[in-house]
Length: 357
Image 1: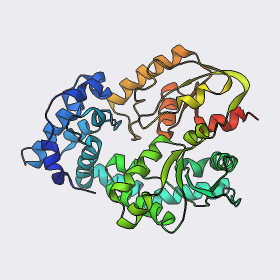
Image 2: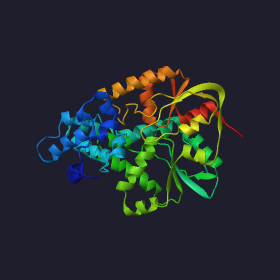
Image 3: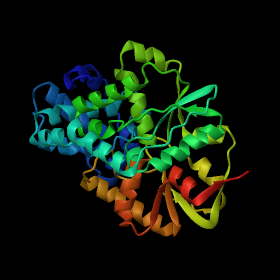
Image 4: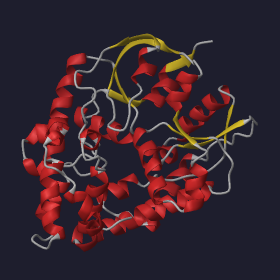
């Protein structure tokens, strides 16, 4: 990955137009110029020019970035702002005491060992050997270790669509490491995942988590030429997109009401509104970030966003809250203190619904 000073020209491309202010949830929540990319780029320009030091205060403002990508979508200079912010986070991570502690906790020895231990305790996943012309890599991420039944269910759905899920055992996509600034550990995890698919022939990479899908797409930027060439012939799909393409319908086993929070990296509202036997209650701020932002620590900005989200969820009085991102599930449970049932959409389909014949 690039170092911060390699983004000097890109940072100077920022015209300071302020369009990012109009879409940045962190700025709209705090009103602080340092919380939006324009202000952060001014600080980073100072760091690169030697006028400022990368320190705890600057990192505090970098942490207000929710990495939702809305600023990049609206940027007239077409800057990948999230990529620059992540590079700046990495700069601080390498030199800080906090980074040294996180490096230990996120090390392969501790992180992957813990996931593998959970896998062994909960039992291995089923093998899927039924042959079909179309083949897919199904990436269930960290949750696959904790809840293998959900990945098995998703793979059964792929079989229903006449797609063969290949039996590949993954751990994490690496997003927690990337978000923290631990690029060394992210690259290590990325290479491990890519090596597992290097010699396999398949048509799709399928996920059920919006953040995992986004992270796999980041791999393309950093992968070697052989893998990049392989990706030219592979389609990224969500299990929900495939459900929609194959006209697979569901109905709730019992009548219930649901609301839905859209993750920053992509929503699947169409799937939910088509489920029979449910009452869909639209969430007022469904497209606004939940405040988790890929980090396990909660900044003040995150907490303010969470307060608004909690109020709007409570207004719906829905039986269940659905989303399609693991981070959002964690955040929504934190917000609601586990007083409401929060489901990943795939878990809701498995536990509360059945296929319509």
